[in-house]
Length: 245
Image (cartoon, rainbow, N blue to C red):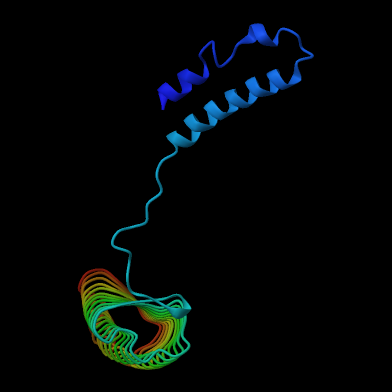
């Protein structure tokens, strides 16, 4: 490439003695064209070579869907922008859109639910039409069918939830037996374990773990409120503080 450029710059290529008379337009034009040709060869020769990914990525399907794994997105007809990775992930999804399922049987029974995220084996397994749920951890939100706006982080968190909504958990088996309770927050292993009440907050290992139907209770600390079963509007702050039944 450099040899070509140097040949264009040789005295023979640019014999300015023959172009002293500016009226010699053809000579000037010929010199200008030669210069631009040399520069073009150098510029284009230095451009990086564009190559595609090899091998090309697979798993791309119509509607902006991505599926990897046996039977992933098996039943899809019109759903769009779904991501299913793992055996039977989003298996039953027909028209649900913008769902993400990663793990064996994740969101396997979802049919028309939208905006759900499941990460882990059997997460959100029974969800059918529930929307905007997030489950991270083996069997988190396993039995959820039509509940909406739930967040479950931890193994078996919100395991039995079916129609409850706006619940938030962080911890193994937190809100484990909740089926229809709404707007509960449980942070800690087995916090609010038996709960089916509403608007309860439990933070700490097994906090409010025996509360069944109580509402508007708050417990902070390990085993806080362990004596509460059906009482409401109780506040327990401190480790092993029993509270009233």
